[in-house]
Length: 387
Image 1 (cartoon, one colour):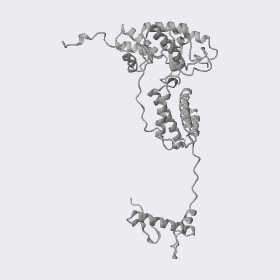
Image 2 (cartoon, one colour):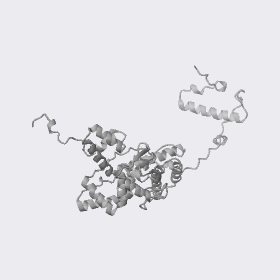
Image 3 (cartoon, one colour):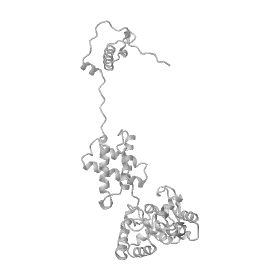
């Protein structure tokens, strides 16, 4: 379907001019002329006046145009970040918001200390983000030491979310985090412990850090992660079961975990100390309390004393990869080896998964392969070569 050609009065045809610059010039002259005529009462249905038209001056043209709208107040960096933090608080979980707020505020302080707190938010570039991430790598490790690439990537992830929300709120038109690659993360192996080391550590904890030992029981006999344990409230625990809500679990799945015989005395003792169902099972007061422990580092620092003792007295050679979380790996390995004595590999894996709550065999095997515990004892007979 062909559209009807538009026509200028009196057969004027500037569109036929082949030179683009000349064509644009003629169109602008016609525009000014028609604006002038319309201001004098002329309508397109009446013939053009025959008298000579004087072109308007630049001042007249400018005066006839509507005044340019004033730009809205620009968002400063500090103001924009505070605004997004307030929005995120409405729908993020308590723990998700705590992490986001910490990173967003740290970025705001970084900008303020560099004199850019009041600068327009739109002035933040990708270069600014990469420089900040270098700062994170250099300073955000434990006690101000160098941070891991995983920590740096976590900061990048939350900053990306911060700027995406600013785009939704029409504070920004672009996300300066886009195009910044995540770094390859070095996986912490959580090196396991021998049965002798477990026994010696348990004896030291019972004498020097009994609260830490109570905490570690939930890791070894409940197969809970440290971050999940510190979120448990009294109302989530009974003498026979632990009800791990999806909002408090790493897997986001609500689960019921039986309290086995080895864990039951610790659970009953902690519940006997509780006064309110809303209280957290572990607190800085070393009994159920209103405020949760700030993070798993509370117990990790205590566990560091245990590692120091093992290295000094028993020459254990523990490193940073020997973690509190590694107790979970060690106990999983232990029950798997027990089942494997009387079962096939598949049967032992299935039985272990029922206890550890792994959803896939590959997830469980990640623990098993780490410690090379599923290899044959001696595969010499498998060779056909004589050498």
